[in-house]
Image: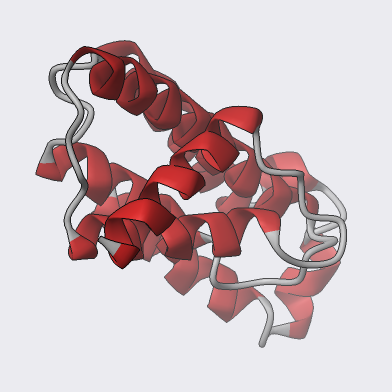
Length: 152
């Protein structure tokens, strides 16, 4: 997933510097970034399907979330391909937040500073900016927990 995000970033950054590629961007179905965005969407759904309260705080879960934040670093907010990647990231973030909330209801547990950093970075990458989607309610609940764990 991280490698796919890196590849998406590399191709997206090449596309913004080449005039010929810009002309082709009008036809999104032929665009390499669109193909990678579609792959990231599939990987997001797969990761969501694998989530359970027992594994939602694993390193793998945070690495998956981090990969989407990495992929969202590039591009402008109005780019439809970038928006697809952002929405896939938001869906994964929402699924993780729901799993975390369920896990914490069963066994209260603070998240690490590294996990808090990844979480906040993802909220910022996905939900801050012109035209960005609003954070899901589950994300706001987890944000409260993160703030409590940081101040504890």
